[in-house]
Length: 476
Image (cartoon, rainbow, N blue to C red; front, side, top):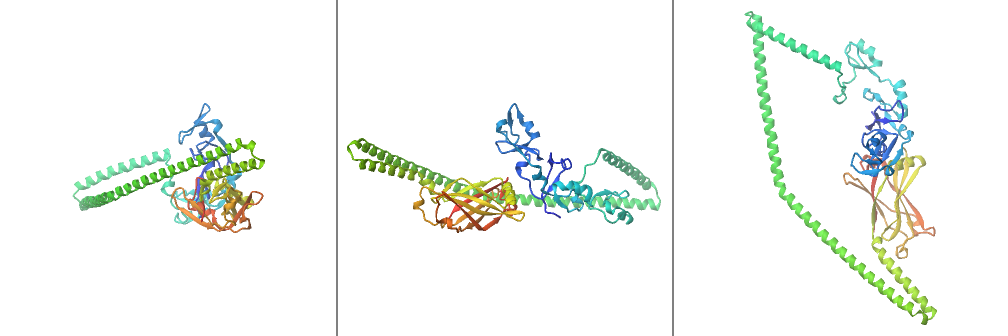
């Protein structure tokens, strides 16, 4: 059997596939699925709240140029809606399982080929036997009949797959129940006549009836006792659980008090840090104001000073300004990590499979003073992709004060947004370009080892809603 995938219903892709659920081996990107009806449609409207709707559901939500999302009741205008067209090939080239999967067909093929396979190639079509009504493969029907309806019977359909009874079947079932009730009344009357008969056969049947009544009473008593025992055990377990929760309640209250104390202390520390930063900012303002005033006084006296003095004053003013700029940038330069989302992972994977690799970069950040642009490189690996790190080193404000060549290790953490689980890997960049930024203002660093399998991250739930949460950290 093929691995378990997901079932989707397509609309607008092919006359032979529309409105027929398909079993896909890999999930379809969320931006192709209507969040209201669950159908996969050719066109979807992406609302500002990031919910996607098909044309039908969107038409039900649009009123007088305004759209109200049915999932979170957020309002938006028609002009704020982004319409996306899904290419037919993007869906029809995905692998699906034959519609006769439940009858034993394990064929896997592209969605565009399933209709032809089902009509002309599949040998697992079934039918009901004309004698016993059992489900049998058409190719085995004659052998089944020759075996007196004993062999080659298909497994019984599971309860969740049992078809609903038609009105005709329900009428037949009602008639059968009425017939059984009538026969039961006739049987009761027959036993009453036998009880009045003095023949040995009548007496024997009467003894059997009394025995059945006695057995029914015994079974009723046993069942009642068993139920009382089970209910007693359940009551005891509930009582024990209640006592356990009562015992743990003081510990929970103590833990909550400790947590409240920690939060209060943290808030106090944050307030102290804010006051310290405010004081430093005020002091920096005073330094800049004093330097500006001193330079202004020098400019007033510039007429009586030689040209060299004017140059000295200008140079001093520029140095003061540079110093102030450096001080203002210091908080930003002290960061050692950044957290970001990698959006539309499926599209990045598909691009890598087409051309061999695909780069993803975020904005420029300062980590431990280095001006960097972190990123990931998706590299084709068979039918999937592997993740490598890559980054640009650009010219920064304090390059002269940094240690070159660049020797820091990089810890890359993938965070599961649902369970908070973390998968980490440490990279050691080795490249001649780590000597420092070049005259072109940037140099690309690519680390080929180690790497991570994208399929493993998807399987373990790290890709959620088409996004990958990543933490990039520069180690000391």
